[in-house]
Length: 147
Image (tube, rainbow, N blue to C red; front, side, top):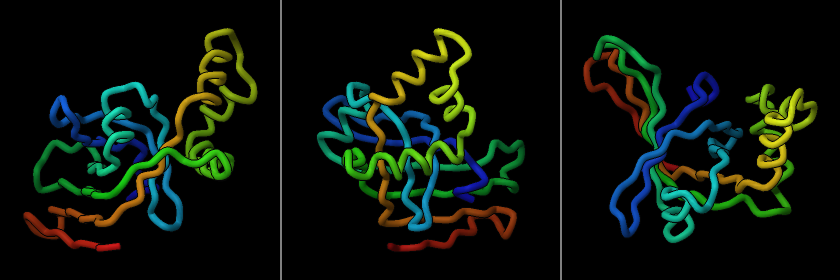
């Protein structure tokens, strides 16, 4: 399911209260999620102050019997510089259009996006708990993985 989807709703909490933001993510074999986000955003500031986060990943459906997704609880930290290259490669494998923007921009706008990608914080969400929800099995069906 992590590979089949690309967007997570990331939830944080800070002095301003709870907050949610959509992020594009890629995952590795250890079920870590990698995403880019500016540390100056509200969720970025919350994560820097207190790395505990939650995330929801799911497809858009029209019927509640089709609800299927993941709820993730864990810690989000900026990827250290020494591991940034490997983590960014995981991210860019999932998003080849972003890799192209970085490696072969077609215009000035794409060049700016590629330059920003080189500077923006890359984060790793290390999950402690993942709950799988699948109403196709039965309403309210869930299974939990504690890491």
